[in-house]
Image (cartoon, rainbow, N blue to C red; front, side, top):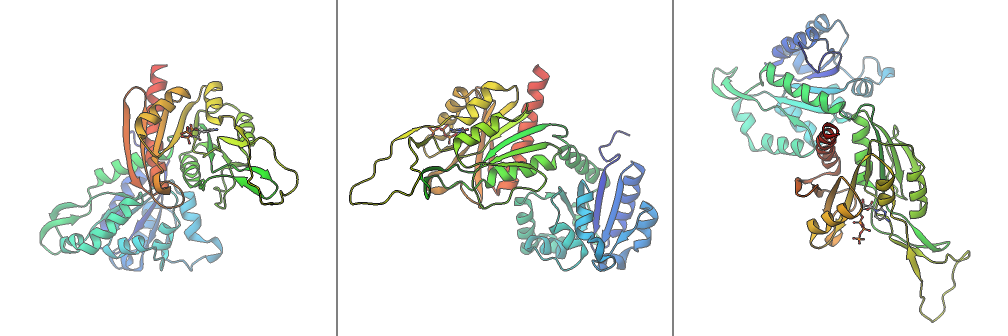
Length: 401
Ligand code: CTP
């Protein structure tokens, strides 16, 4: 059977509902399809099915507490080893904990520490599922990029008919396939990302810069890495920390960013999120300028365009970013054509929107009239949506070649 789960490492988290018995059947199917399954369960789940059931099915240890082998830090190790995590069944309580970042047992701690795709398959009584609190919590999780596998209508444990049955095995397996496909979508690809502002000094303590924090580029670097790419990040000055497993070159000025980017070998994908200063002072004073009563006039000269230089030199798929305050899309399309890009992501930066750690809203444009609204969401969620679509566009271009 051709399934993406063959050979995959799956972390199955089981929380305490009657549907926990179905998680055992699902484990058996995953094992039969060749997945390596680690199971973590809550104390309530253990009331319904024993850990022994899962360890017999997986021929692996089952994890039920944070305190068994603390020297192995199981909550970090397990999520680092897995390619995908699945919470099935997800109780209303576990959904609420995840939505609020509560980490008071092994399963909630694992899921909070997860940087891999997390799939959530709720199962509960219809009244609990439809309760406004549960629906609000699910909306929070959806907005944060968790994949929800909606429950089904049918016979419930309470001998009632309603919505709340755990999704069928085939739907869960299909969702796992999609998540695994995505988690390897950039395997073996080299990705170059520019991020952050640049600083153009006119004396040793003063410079011209902008409000960019590099958050979007860092989110893209992390997401590309999670999808198996070898990522190089050329990062301007920012207090944000780049991901540890991404090769990062720190630069300060636009000229240095240009040189560092062009010094990299061939890439498959280039994404330029950096807010590069377009001008630099013609002269930099070697010592601090003393103020007098007169005005200061600083002559500015043009900086190199890092992205245009990369696009001209390389065969990579090239994605630019356009920060616009007016007439967003036509201006961005013009920029895309002028710099020789394959696609451009537009964000509206009027009123400082788009900068910092908050939400952003992006529209991706390509070709004559290609357009996809990536919506308003956190930067990590937008990074995943952008890479999904870029993957499709790269594959289409590859098919044409
Ligand atoms: N860019 C770059 N080097 C520059 C200027 C811009 O690499 N010197 C890249 C940015 O990283 C972004 C894209 O070009 O991917 C578009 O940048 P934008 O901020 O929209 O500005 P400009 O293209 O310079 O156009 P303008 O400032 O006139 O709007």
